[in-house]
Image 1 (cartoon, one colour):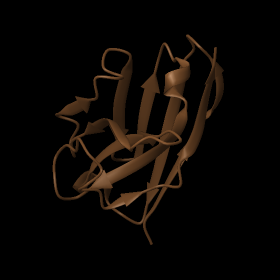
Image 2 (cartoon, rainbow, N blue to C red):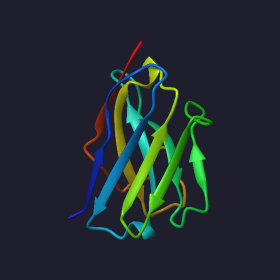
Image 3 (cartoon, rainbow, N blue to C red):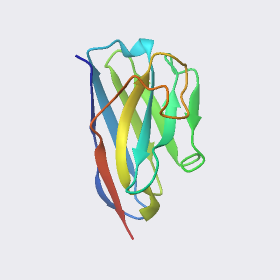
Image 4 (cartoon, rainbow, N blue to C red):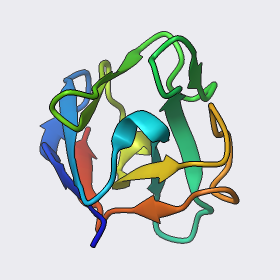
Length: 124
């Protein structure tokens, strides 16, 4: 059974930072592009970042480019996303996701698995 379990969410003040982590089990993550998407109430899902199977390529959405870093550790089956300079517009549920069909993903259309999500709330 594939599981992606997110951690690291919570409440933070504007200007602060968060490091989100994802622990994967039931799959060999070295076979998957990994990444993060978020969904705020009333808004569409937005892929924030993805990283290729051997971490040779990364993608960042415009909304987080320059203030976030995605990384992975295939030996530990983990993926992380560091986001800095948070604003209230970053408030959303953040999900870890994987795709075995591409090296990077930019939308949620080609995802194979995702977790239950972790809430991030940024106060002004």
